[in-house]
Image (cartoon, rainbow, N blue to C red; front, side):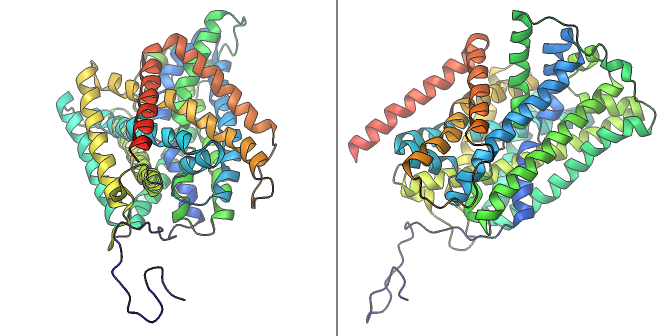
Amino acid sequence: MNSPHTVEGQPPGPVDPLAPRSLPRVLGLFSATMVVVGSIIGSGIFLKVGNVDAALQAWGFGPIIGVWALVGLVTLAGSLAMGELAAMYPHAGGPYVYLREAFGKPVGFLWGWTEFWVVRTGSIGALASATVIYLDQVVPITRFQQASLASLIVIGLSAISLFSTRWGAAVQNVATVAKVAFLGLIITLPVLLGHAHPENMTPLWRGGVSGDFLRGLGLAMVAVMWAYDGWINIGPVAEDIRNPERNLPLALIVGLSVIITVYVGANLGYHFVLSMPQIAETKTVAADVFQVMFGETGRNIAALGVMCSTFGATNSNMIVGPRIYLAIARDGLLPASIHRVHDVFETPANAILLQAAWTVTLIVLFYTWKDDPKAAFDGLTDSVICAGLIFYSLTVAAVYVLRRKHPHAARPYRTWGYPVTPALMIAAYLAVFVGMLLEQWQESVGVLGLIAAGVVYYALFNRRR
């Protein structure tokens, strides 16, 4: 068979370096599941636990543990739909491809636009910042040093992803196993070492559903959604996965089931050791729990465990993002150089470099804007969730649209519980978005303004073309 660059009877001509090339399928089911788990378990289960208790402790432990389970089930409902889409379109880009096929190029482009400016780069910046926040627990460092180290983490992991997808996956696999093992210690050690105090979980419910309760529930759900953010990350790396029709849905379902179990268990472990008011006040709950059990040495051990978790999640997001920009550039909506696959490393090198540059810029901006590193972290995460609420909902809604547009298309996996499960996720996300508009309007207005700028860019770009 002739290659696309040859003509029968003639010697092969030069290969266009900007012609789109497919990525090699080098990741198996285990690596795909590790991408799901590693993308989700990052900083939220360590740095957002206090936010949840602060919002809901007045109503007892029941709502606190309930919101972790509820958001997990909502996320699982969304991932069931995501599995159908990923198996239908196992290509780089993930949600960009699904949105493009369901709603057209403009909507798909706006997803990629928001991913680059806020969602993906903001996630990477927040996770790198979380890593150095816990490093400060072991070796006290200044605010400037924290910003510098967070930037160096981004640069170093970008280099690994640029040189080899397998190297990036290997880092991911090791970090994911380590972070799950560390959370396993949080779940089991309080009981094994005699530090479990069930009275910390009382009262279970103080009763009454008021406006203040609903407001607190909304704030808690935003915090927990950051802890579950990353469930959509398997889609963009679909082109790197072997046997995607089987492995993509399976990795999502297995990965989310592990996450829900671990998150609920970790919260039980935290509350066995610390009271709700103590957790509401702390910014380093894992370190505080280990300090109670092992003294100052335990605090340092916990800090290292959290750093491993956030470092691994940073790496996972680093792998995912460039595949989205690559897919958009393939459609001619970004410069062709962005979809270039490196001749030697077979990675989206230019997209990786572009992502690293803007992520470092965001880190510098937020560390300059906010009063302390934790405030910079919260600012980044809230912006990510606000944008994600919009486009994650649209992505799940693509299941309904594509069932109508392409009813006979091959669907190796079909959404379990359709049409109810996708609707549950969309309804929950819509409710939280309305709450963010009311309570955190600055982040919401900023994200909506960014999307509007993307509309203008797309219109001007198309007009020029």
